[in-house]
Length: 311
Image (cartoon, rainbow, N blue to C red; front, side, top):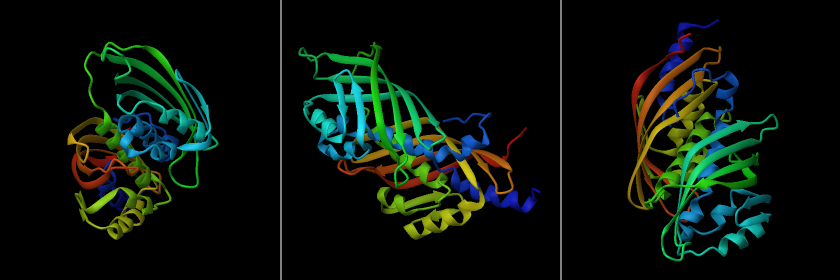
C-alpha cells in the first residue's frame, strides 16, 4: 500500500536525482525505466567513439578502450576485425584532417541477454580529405552492438557505418565539445540510475574542488556523493532521465559549459510512479588525453516539481 510518508520521502530525494537527461515519453514502461542506466552507459561509449577522430592528440588508446578485443568495424574504409586491426587502420588516417560528427538521432534497445543495440544517424564533416580544401559532408547511419563488461560501461562488439547520402551542410563547425560533454553526462546518468549504487566510477570524472549544487544542499566531496547515492538516492528503486535542449559553450578544449533539461521518471519501492522536470547548468574541465571530461560544478533548477505521474 502506498503511504504519504513513502511518497513524500521519494519526492524529496528526486529533486537531487534529476541532475542529469531527452523529453521522456509518457508511455515509458517500467522496464524502460529500469533499463535506463544500461542505455546511458551505451551512449556514454558511443559519444566517446568520436574522441580520437576529432582530437587525435588525445591518443588512440582511448578509442580502443571502448571496443571488445574481437570487435568488427565496417565502414566505407573497409573492415577491421579485432582491436589490433582497428588501431592500425585508424593510425593511418592523416592527423591534419579536421573531423566533426553531429548526432542527429540515436536509438537504443536493451536485449534479453543484457547487450545493447544502438543505432544512430549523424552528419559527418571533414576538412582535409578533398585535395582542393573544400568541405566534405555526409549523412551516415550507424548500426552497433555493445556487450556487458565487468564494469558499468559496455564494450562495442560490432560497428557498421553506412553512407546514407551526401549532406548539404556548407560550413565546417566543430563538434568536439558537444560529444565530449554528452559522453560524461550519460556516464553520470548511468551511475546514478544503476541499482548497484556504486559511486566509485564517478571518481574518474569529478574535478578537484567540485560542487554539486542540489536543492537539498551542496555536495563537495566524494564521500558526500557516495553517502547520497546509497542513502537518499535509494528512496527510489529505479529512475530514468531523458535529456533535452542541450547546448554547449566552449572557447577552448579545456573549459566547457553546458545547459540542458531533464524529464525524469522514478519508481518508489512500493511501485508509485513519479515524474519531474529540471534545468541544469554544468561546468566541465577537460584534459584531451583522459577518457572523460571532469565535472567542476552542477547547478539544478526545478522546472516541474516532483509528483506522482498523472493518469
